Amino acid sequence: MAQHIITAETILEVLKADTKGKGGIFTIKSIKTQKEYSYKINRVCYKNIWYSHIFVETQYMDFLYLGYYSNGNLILKGQVNKVPSAIAIAYVISCIEKNELKYINERTQFFHLGKCIKCGKPLTDSNSIQAGLGPYCRSIV
Image 1 (spheres, rainbow, N blue to C red):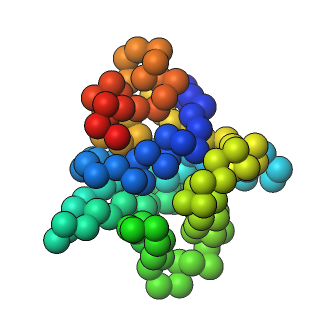
Image 2 (cartoon, helix red, strand yellow):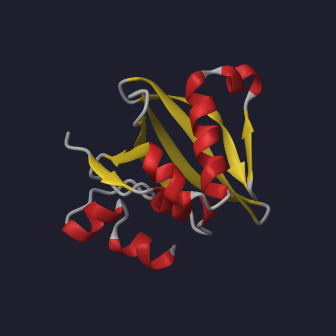
């Protein structure tokens, strides 16, 4: 499956959206170390508070729950905060939250799999593939 480069701004849009997402998948790759981790994020609203649930891929398309992001906080589940993939996403989200988008874009690459990272539907036009979000998800972010 072809991967397409997106930016930290796309991840920020998904984390801050006030809309439900079914689970977009993306990969973060460190330019310095070349290590990469794939994540899945889905959005839910519970008692009028939005939560981005974050999962990490442990085997091909098999994801482990890491924790959630809400109101500027990343809450990791149990001892998972010592796992390299959890440290990586915590660092990236921290930089994104501080609006250090240029900094994080210079140090990491973000990829999506040709599906909207918000709703998971296949992307069919070049603007959507480049953005990592379909036209509907771009319009409501």
